[in-house]
Each structure stands twice: as C-alpha cells, then as structure tokens.
Image (cartoon, rainbow, N blue to C red):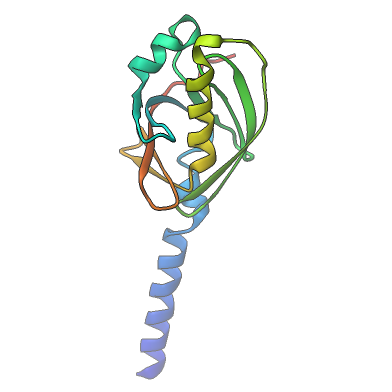
Length: 153
C-alpha cells in the first residue's frame, strides 16, 4: 500500500513539474511578433500607443519579435534594435545589445521609455494567446502588447 501511495505521489509530482516547465511556457513566445499597446513610463505615467504613434516615425508602433534561440529584435518607433531574451517559467529578462542610430528628436524620450520597460521587465504573462503582459519585479504591470503576424520575407 505504501509503494502504491509513493508511486502515485511521484507520478503527480512528475506531471506537475512537466506541465509547469519553462520550455512549455516560452514556446508561446518563440517566433512570435508583438506590437506595443501601452507602456508604463519610469515616471509612472501610462503611454498608450496612440500617443506613442504620434511620435513614431511614419506612425509605426513599437514591436518585439522573439526568435527561436533567445534572440529578440524590435522597433522603438524610431530605431530598430536587437538583443537577447531569457525565460524561465514566468520570469523574463531582456538584454538589448545594439540598435540603429537614427536621430528622431521628437521620439527620444518615448524611445527611452520603451527601452526602460524592457530592462525593468521581470515577469510575463500571455493571455488568450494574443496579449503579452510585461511586469516588473514587484509584479506590477509595465507594458502590454498585442500579437501580430510576422511578415513573410
């Protein structure tokens, strides 16, 4: 009887570990593109992409594209950027390693807010396979994104 209980408990724990594994959660992000819907600035203001779009070059909204090997690319509204991301469970971190250097005086502050959101991100949640929420280390919302189709090259 004790062996049966131990075996059952082992199987339940194994199932829980497998179903909550980081790989399973991060598969939602791999090879997906997201367009910013709203961002929280370091000053505590909320910047909707309608406001952001006003400043962005040709009205293009900020984006994030998650690659399959931990790479990330995106657009800030003025410049393209690239770097790496890492997920473990619901934790996420970004390391922006480079960007183009276009000068967009009207978007400088807004672009910095976008980079700050990525740097402050510590947790993420995908809701309904179409909304990505980024949160800071205190689990406060700092950005939301809507899933978009990746253009075919």
